[in-house]
Length: 287
Image 1 (cartoon, rainbow, N blue to C red):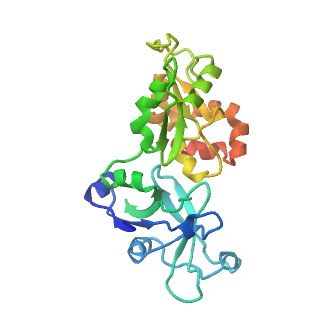
Image 2 (cartoon, rainbow, N blue to C red):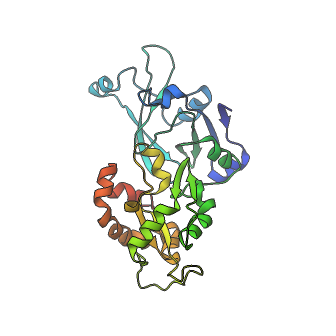
Image 3 (cartoon, rainbow, N blue to C red):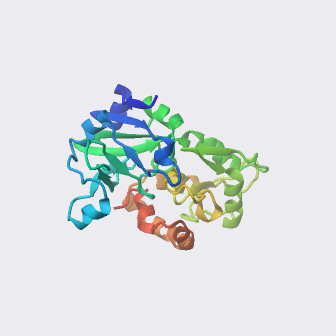
């Protein structure tokens, strides 16, 4: 399956009217490669409803001429508004390319990228084949954990075992290691970083407070930062189950203050990744 159309169940889950996608080639996605995707004929049918006039050849020269080079999309799955560069790379012909942006749209070789239209806007996204299969069945990912939400119980259980089996679970092709989470738990002194006074219960096996691990810069973002490991102690918040549910499901206004406070001790880590606090807050519904 190199080219595909979204079926009825996927369109319903996305509240979309149409959707098309194709595989990212090795040349397009590899280091030193094109770092762009070619828009197929059927993908153009969606793209051209929203953007249809693109510059030719050099984007830099087009900008110097005052031509529009950046075009707006909604980003799957969190819906934030992003801009990506598009051009016709040759002096003649209809070939159209959308260019990668490291912290926004950065698929890997052999991933699948796609466009779809929902509520009169064009959306763009990319997933590896295994996760695309879930989406094609109508299953939506969590905006922070991706499809690893379905391994969440095992991951948190391993964190609260006496001798964790050091299980790893993967989200969008990247691993979460229970041993790393265990190190963050010890470092926390078995205290919830967000709501330290909120009651929790004892772990049946350790008799310590039952707490959970949450990646402040979500692991679903790992696909946009391929050269940096996000599964590190510095990126893990230790939270009680109530607080953990809050960061995933509460309105942004309810958690904004907590998130900004949790960002403070992680400023150096975030700078090392090359991401701003505001960019992280967008993962939680921030402006």
